[in-house]
Length: 321
Length: 302
Image (cartoon, rainbow over all chains, first blue to last red):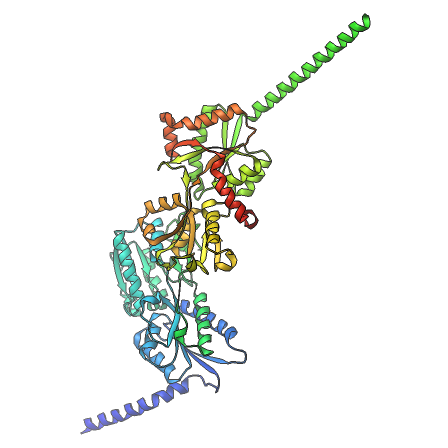
């Protein structure tokens, strides 16, 4: 009897909780004045690359908005796992924002999964053509960098027979990069070892035994959210790290070939402004940026006793000394 | 009578000193010329790997020095501007010039194109290529509008003159408004890598460099798509000043043209990555001169 009462109490409290949740969420989000455009932003983790996109987005939006038009941004930076991202998307939908901007593939998928009528603009997604972001309410921009070039440069300063690719199976674009790399590696007789990172715990359990000649970091939100932990772990081996996302701290990754995030931030802001002015997302053509920046970190290379040939350095957009 | 004798003597003295003056002048001129032709200074335009280039040319100039009995010295120039200065100050007797620089130098300094190397594939000409990444979606000139482009150098036929001329034919007249961005990579290889890496959407470069890179790494060919190819242009050509003594010029030319007939010469040619040298002619540069005139590229040089 006591047991049944407890169950009833629990049911009642859960129902009350479920009923109150939207109000609690709305209460915790910033107060919005009437007439203001409310823009919800979901970032796939607290990744510097997405933060840079966001900074440029805010700057451009301030210039793009019609004069006198005010806007409020509600920014969500959940841990890049599906549940946290989904909760962040639901919060914004419950707040009835006018527009949602999503950074990175996981956040975009989480927002689109909710199937709301709120227009969505995405940015910072690797090769969005492969993501199937379909629907009349979605547009955005992404980037594509040639993974083959990264591999070519790496092989020019270190012989590679086995390569460790660090990716996250939680993120579609990270998986696609791994698949692209697998094709290239097979063509070039390079053995590929996959390291799947779904949480911080996965980094701690990476075995340093039988590792390859270098690490390839895919553009994964999970991987870059825990980059410091990952570097602390992999540095013991003194193996070069290369990546398709920039190393904002410039400590650890020797070679990056990446797209400038500010360009995506600017484009996403322009798209958002057009939607706010009344255009439908379906009228705005999605864009894939292919221009990239090649950065060599000679300081880190030196620490590892690696010499980058001068003809490679000559190709660099930027060299960190 | 005495007066006549005195006049004749005075005339003889004048004639004697006159002849002496002429002989001294002649001697002085000969000595000067000998001193001048004791050394032949040949200029080089820098390639991507300058150390490799100097090593290749040094063996050739050492061979020429031994065969001609005079010192043949190499000097690296920076750009067309330096070629101009050096020929004006007469501190260069000749230079191995790319077709663009050669065309201008022939026209402006009355240089004579004398010989050019035939590469290991039996070709003494090069072609310019315009290319993009295969996955860029660029197929027509309409697709090129608004994209970024990498040229090699404003003083190259394959890496600037030809693509500019091609774009002009396609109605893309203004680099600043028809393209989102343009820049110069400084070398053919760098232009190719810039497109491969996505640092530029469209690139232009010499076919020889393109072929060399794709032979080394076959993945490059599979990633790039060629949008246009130029007609054949003369490859690097040795051009000489016209006032170089005829005998020296003939000896130099015959040494170069006959190099492939001796074992020693063949060995050096092989290191120079050439089969032989062949005669060059003014007519080789006519097409380039026409293109230069139509584009007035000198005005646009950076």
